[in-house]
Length: 259
Image (tube, rainbow, N blue to C red; front, side, top):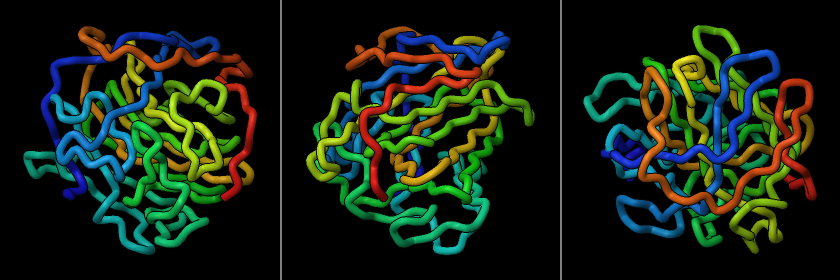
């Protein structure tokens, strides 16, 4: 499978939960679905993919090649062969479990119906942040998020300034998929999207605070200079319950993953 697939999309995502950092006009919305099987091969053992993968303007990174041990940065090319984005590892990428890097193990985010994911995925642990930088502004970001631990943090930036930040302790109370390989912990495909030109972004930072890891797979992105179009959308599996805490947003936590 190729690392990057730039694909065609007319349909988009409906606003389910809109959240904004306190004191900011920016608001990045999100919802959660089961996701879908690999839309290019229909494989079910490679984690869940975005409901928008395979549609116009959506670029997907599956982590199955191109991320070598020790790499501090990995450039991703778009379909036209030009540079689309870069993954930056603050302390280098590992290829073995329990460290920030890209590899395959039992904690790989599950498939759309809880299937075991035998492909490679991105893991982030404390002390080694992963930063995604883009050549253009984005208005959509999706991830297959599995076996989620407390301390997982997303931060969205534009021109070096924070647009919004989200912290998810655990999605077990609302996750649509229960994966037996993760001891019944929740999995799901999360869709983050801009609601106006004020919250488009050109950088995402993934950070893990404390124990446990931040496991994700099959990242999808769409370029945009304004709100992500919200028509012809898939129905969300659940609506996420939120608690505002000091400008960050935490999902209720029931269980902590062990790495």
